[in-house]
Image 1 (cartoon, rainbow, N blue to C red):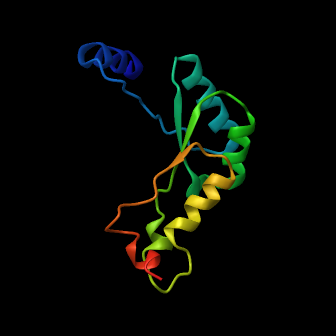
Image 2 (tube, rainbow, N blue to C red):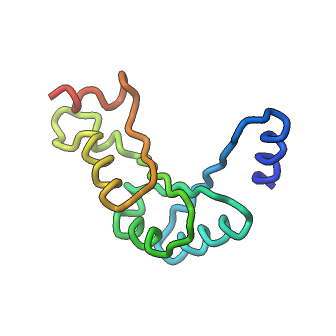
Length: 119
């Protein structure tokens, strides 16, 4: 249903649109969800790399479904917002890239991640 709405919006606006359903779960369920997205004509999947873990992200990548995998970092502020933690936003981005996520939200130029990045 959502993908049909995306297609309609593309036709109406003449602009490319995309939809990233969140497939985060334990590894086997996440792959099942991603396979469903692919079978429905989806091109993208979003995974919360903090809660699902990097090994599950790697498992999804190795399933070779041909989806763009977007690494989302829900709950990252618990790790990255405080100066007392040694875990800057750039580190989670680098870890996501090392697991071959296609894209990753890295935070705003000014905002949640700036405390750690100023060092």
